[in-house]
Length: 409
Image 1 (cartoon, rainbow, N blue to C red):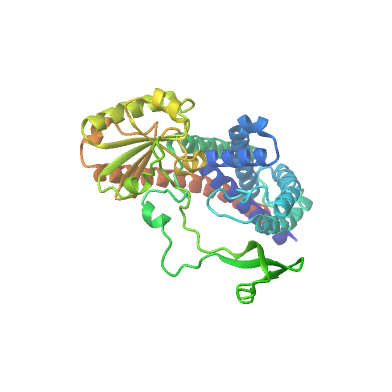
Image 2: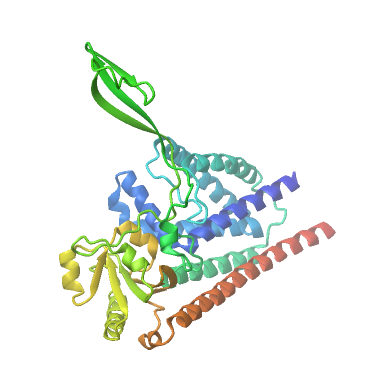
């Protein structure tokens, strides 16, 4: 029974830890998912709580997972896991039946599950959590109060810093289709031979007051007594959908500039500001200053926004303005404003307003600037991963040393 208990705790801990971690990589994306839920359930008045609730959920899952893995406050963690499953399992059943939101977001953008897949996943996890809850008083491998406080406190501090960094400087891992290295024209194209949508097409004809449905193979093409009434198409199977299928940039006059921007052989810097009147003021001023410098040197700079044309023209006069769907811009880059460097349609680098390089760095080789940015990001990711892994290893080592000491006694 002890082996079953420890196995259930470890499995539950790993799932909760992973779920909290991937959400914590992109807490703003989790907040957007909360907004989707509030809209779907006619509760838009809660939208301002989206980000705080997202951060609480990320922290709750991550710390619960850490406590179960390390043996810190296992009784409390067992209650927390049981309450989570009691809340979310019925909720995912409702989502599966009514489908108000297509993706639950339970693993952020790292793993996409349908609502029915999420529900069945929760059923399996609930069974494991029941074992954890029933055996919540089993003291095998449970840390002392002092060690439990240290392990839990450390995990809270480290994870808070982790989420703050991802909010301030963009997610350390970008799971979205606009990540650095993506060639936008390729991601928007449909490869040759890709499956197309399949429809069942029916024609409705009427004769002598009687209506009848026909297929393409048997409709009365040569019988003039039949009068065409209507046609209906039912999707049988969806065809190939490219990773980017809603990326469109237009001018204030409605001219589509998508191909021009993604096909340019020059380096272009896009400043994405979803709503100029709401975007971070300091970031906007920094972007305007850089944009003026680039324009003076004849380099491409565009402001991409979903702000109404009149407001945008007044807020950012003298700049090239492009307009796009706000939801698309949230997917392109999380920071508001955020900056993308494009070359031949490939995303070379992404910056938030906080880590945008000085304008003097844009005077040199922009490919080299992109490489430096990517190298810094990889180094930061290595440091963060190392801290998290070492923290988990130390906590687990303390737990298993405790088990060994108990067995020797």
